[in-house]
View 1 (cartoon, rainbow, N blue to C red):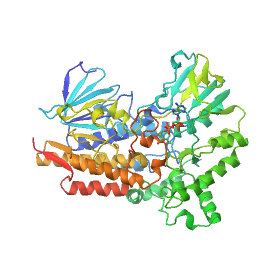
View 2: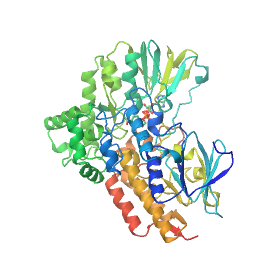
View 3: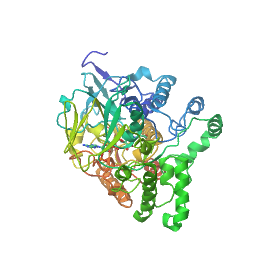
View 4: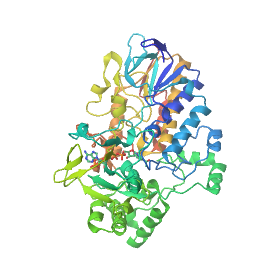
Length: 539
Ligand code: N01
C-alpha cells in the first residue's frame, strides 16, 4: 500500500480493471504513458469477477466475446464451451493480465471515491475511498455498464435471520443451497440463469416474479476441435466481418425479409430453426423488422409464448410465465438452459409478486401482501443501476467545479458516449450514448479504447493539452440517439435501458441502437475531421 495522501503523478488514471480497463492499460502503455488502473475488486475481470452466481455465463459466443487485438492471444486461448461460463471468462481475463504483464500497474481493492479536474493545472485528481491520491492529465472511466448492483429497499432486510446475496456481489467461495428453502427475486438474465441451477440444490425454491420475461434456449455445448480450429483458421476474417455488423458479432447474416412477408407456416419454420440453433441475437435476426414493427414483433412473441405453453405443464404457471407487457427484444432477451422446464419440478414454486407484491423481508423470510414465505436464503437477481450508476457513484467534478451528478440530473448527456461537455480529458468507455450494451461488449470496448488511444496520441503529437466535447455537438448527439431509439420498439419497454428499474431515475433511453458498424464509421469520421465536435486547446 502507498502512504495515505501521498500523491502519485501519472499520465493517465484508469478506473476499473474489467475488459475495458485491461485493454486501456495495454494501449496507453504502448504509447509510453505512465498509467495506473484502480480497481475496487480484489482481482481483475470486472463483471466476471463479481457475477459468480450459479449458472452465470455469457450470452455471446466465446469465440466472439474475446479480445481481437492480438492474433497470438486469440490463437492460444482455448474456450471450453460455445457460451463460456463465468469461471472460464474470469480465467481468460486473468490470463490476459498475466500475458500482457498488466498486473504491475493495477491496484486492486481501490474503490474510487472522487475525480476532480483542476482548472489551473489541467489535471484530474482521483481519490480512493482509502485516501490515496493520483493525479494525471487524463482520466479514463472503464467502470462498466452493469456494475452498481441494486438491492430494492424492502423494509426488514436487516432483520432477516437467513443469508442473502446479490447476483452481482456473489461470494467468491460460492454458496451451497443444499437442503435450504431459497427465494430468488427477479427474473431478468441473472435470475433466468441461476434459477435452474439453484432448483437442483435447494429443498424448495420460490421464484418471486414481478414481470415475466422472454427467454430463448442457449443451446450451449462443449467446444469441438472442428469448430475451434475452423474458426481460428479464419479468425482475421471473422473479426473483420464482426466489425461490419450492428452487434459486433460475426456469423449471423442480416435478414432480408420482413416477418409479415412470410406465411404463418413459413414464419413458424424460421422461428423453430432459430429456437433450435440457440442464441438471442440469432433469434432476433430472424426478420429484419422485429425491433421496428410491432405487428412483426408480435409474431415472434407469440411463438415464444407457445413454447412456454407447451413446456410448462401447469397451465396457470405457464400463463404467468408468458410475457405480455413488452415486445420481445426490447428488454435484454434472456438466454437460458432449461429455465421454463424448471417450473415443472415439484420443489419449485412461482410466486406472482405483480398481483401480490412483496411487502417486507421478515426475520424468517419474505412477506407479500397476502402470504409469508419461510426462507433460509434470498438471492436478489434484481439488477443494476445501469449505464450511469457506476459513474455517478463517483463524485466527479469537471471544469469550474461542475458536478457530473448535477449535469446529468435529468439524464446522461454525452458526445458519442465518449465524453461529456465540461469534463475535459475525461473519457468514458462504453458510456451512455454509445452502442455498448446493445453489442458484443468486448467489440465495443476495443472500438472505444482504440479511438481514445489514437486521440491521446494525436493530442500529444500536436502538443494539445485539452480535449472537451462541445455543447452543441453533444446536444445534437443526444437528439440523434433519441431519434434512433424512437424509430424502434425499444422505448416501449420498462427496461434498464431507460432507467425504469431504478425508482426516481430520469427516464432516458441510454444506448445508441443504430449499430456498432454505423457508430464506428461516425467515430472514425469525427477523428479524421480533426475531432469534429470536440474543442481542442493547447493550454
Ligand atoms: O437484472 P434485470 P439482471 N420486486 O434488471 C426484478 C446483463 N446480464 O441482473 O422487470 C420484485 O434485467 C425485475 O422485475 P421488473 C444483461 O444485459 C447478462 O437479470 O422490474 N422484482 C427483473 O425481473 C441483463 O439485461 C447475462 O418488474 C424486482 C429483475 O429483478 C443485465 O445484465 C447474465 C424488484 C431484474 O432484472 C441485467 O440483468 C446476467 C422488486 N422491487 C446479466 N426490483 C448474460 O450474458 C427488480 N425486480 C447471459
